[in-house]
Image (tube, rainbow over all chains, first blue to last red; front, top):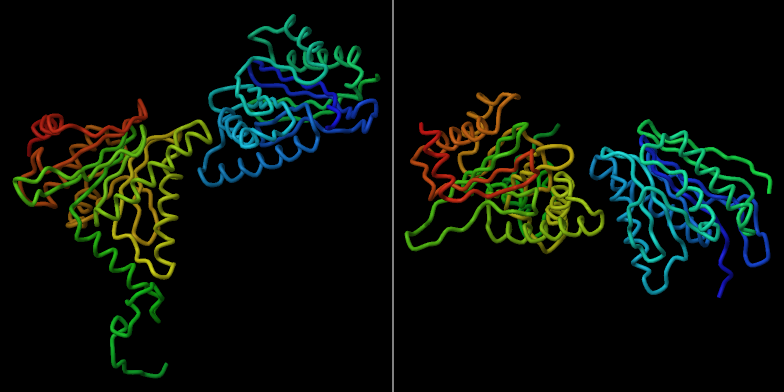
Length: 199
Length: 244
C-alpha cells in the first residue's frame, strides 16, 4: 500500500459566497515530494473543489467533473447547481465503491439558490455544511474555524478565517505547509490566489 | 441542365423501400411517410403561458364498449406529453422518456430539464431515420413541462427534430387549430386564457361536439412545477366554464 499523503483543505460558506483553500505540500511518508502541489481546483466560473488525499486521484476527479459539467451545461442550456455538481461527483466516487479514489473533497460554489458547500468522503457521501476541513491538518483547522464562524460572515472575513485556519494547521501538522492556494467565489465569479507562508 | 424524362417518379424508383436512403432530391421518403402517420393521428394541441402550459388531446372511442386509451402521459413530476400518431411507437418512447427522467434525478439530484429530455427522445427518433433494418417512429409529441428555466412547450417530429412553441397543434386538422392559435395568441396570455384558447382551437378544428368523454387535458403549472392530468369531472367543469 501507499503512504497516505498529508494535506489541509478548508471550505467556508459566507453570506455572499464561499472560500476554498488548501496547502501546497505533497508528502509521502517522511519524504517531501513537492512544495507546489495543487489541491484546489476551479471547475467552472462559480464552482470549485478543494481536496485532500492522493494528488493523482484528485486531478482525475477534477478533470472528469469538469468535462461532465461542460457537457451538462451545453446540453441543458443552464448552469449547473452546486448540489447537482456535488451529486455528480458523488456518483463518480461511488462508482469506485470497491476500489475507491483515495480522496476527500469539498465542493463549493454559488448558484441561483445562493452559496453552498458540500463535503464528500472517498465513496461519495454528500453532506451540506457551513464549513468543513479535510486532511491530516483538519483537526487543528476546524478548531479555529469553529471558534470564529458566524452565519453572516462576509466573504472577506471568511477568506481571512480560512487563511488563519490553514496557517494554524501548518504550525502543528508536519505534513502540511508551503503556502496556501485559495479560491473565493461570489455571484460575480471566482478569484484564485496564492498566499506564501513561511514554515 | 439537360432534360431527362423520368420513366418512374422518384418514389417508384425504390427510394421508399426497406431502409431509409436519400432520394436524389434529398428526401427520406420513409420519414415523410412517418409524418403522414402523425397527420392521421387525432388532434393534439398545447398552449403556453407564463403561468404554465396546457395540453389537450381529442380522442374518439371506436366503440361504446371501449375503455379510453390515454393520449396524454405523465413522464415525471414536472413534465408530460401528448402524442399524435401510432400508439405503439409512442408507448416505447414514453417508457424511455420516463427512464431518462429518473436517471437524470439519480445522477444530478434534480428534475430533468424539459428541453434536455426532449433532446434525448429526439436522439432515438433520429437514429431510426439512419440505421438499416428499422423504420422511423410514426409519432409526434408535444412535451409540456416546467423547470428552472420556466414553462416549456416543445414539439418533436418523426425525423428527430424538435421546436419550441408558444402554442402548437399536431395530428388531424392541426393546420385549422394552428390558424386559431396564431390569430388569437398573445404573449401576456394567462393560464385560464390558454385553456380557453386551446378549447376554441379544438372546437374549430374538430368541428363537432367536444365533451369530457372525448377530450383529455393536462396542465403544467409554473408555480408548483407540477404536471397534472385532469380528471373527467375537472374537464367537464372547464368545458362548461368556457361554453361556446
